[in-house]
Length: 505
Image 1 (spheres, rainbow, N blue to C red):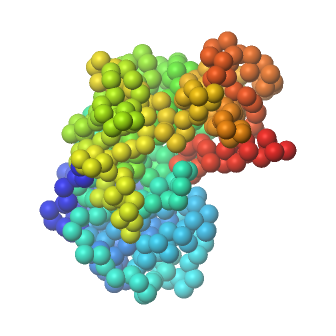
Image 2: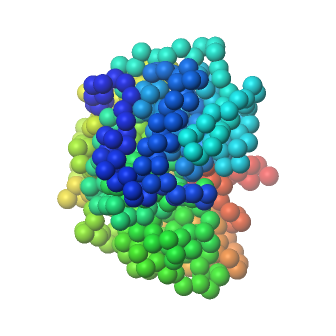
């Protein structure tokens, strides 16, 4: 069922609520331009609140923040939350038309440009907003259709889904959702004042915002913000900046390992104590490669925007030899449902259903989609498919919409991807279905390591030795780089279009 509304129904001082104020002289944030202590951060948030009030931002107003991973974006989110307005977090990697669609949907009071180059498109009648001692950002004031929402659910953020399987939806996350995940994550990952947490994942997404940013602040650590993943920058940070925690996605770890190998560098990370991955299914080859690189267990996790980024997570001190996403997060309940709606038998694949305090408040201005997302008995139906072992640990096998039906057999893309990923020349791969008469073909796209020249035929032979005949790709296409969304996930919609075009050509 959906989480309980925040009882205050208004803004929360996130810094004070998380207890981070007691660390006033410790560093809270570092980006490419400056470092802020918790005292600096608190003053910047207070000053930004004053500037937002002067711009007539009130409780329930929406404020679009087009931001990168920088101090200004964090300060703006915390200030908007303190006022009880809603942060509409938009990555500066979005195209102008995507930002315009968000603005048209949520009717904001302000549009703020906190992007790295301060050049967010779409600002027409811009003025300046002072973000404390950090300086000015550009804003555009809106006066039409921007009335405050009567916020009975305590909404803090609107996060738009990536839209890889359909039109983006605005996920409403409450103060209670975000604070629950932040506090629980700080405990689970043992964040402490001595930690320096590297964040190259977008803080405009639930994982970067709740789990990494707010989780770090809840533990009194320092958030080391990187505008985007750059292997050379990461290598220097691990070597010189005492980074203790490296969150990532499978593609980040793969590309970093490949860059180190190609540049013939050895990794020096003297303070690193934990490496994590989430967002995309973890393949066994990726796990082995990352663990060999870092000399640490790769901690895996699973979640969605609608679950404030977390459903399951592996546990520190209990490394797993497989690619499980671990057991449900504290306070979160999970069940696996068969196609009939009954509970899936142990070891069988079922759809992941979730309840708990991490669940979103619904889709903004889309009540039909909100109703459709929940079962009759109040569980959120994720659309993801998984199986559970005897200990309750989940293994994600894919999304129900991604499952391929070939010759009446069900093919889960991750099985084919894992087989191809075992090839030493493959750095990354993605498998999609392609319509073929009344059937579906299995089509694979692969990205090879620098200098590799293996042919599709060689890759097909390699996969054939590891897969049942009905799972073998009908076609394998080698790309210089797999297309990705701005959150780091592979853009499967683009690959499906490419597969169809290649068949037609």
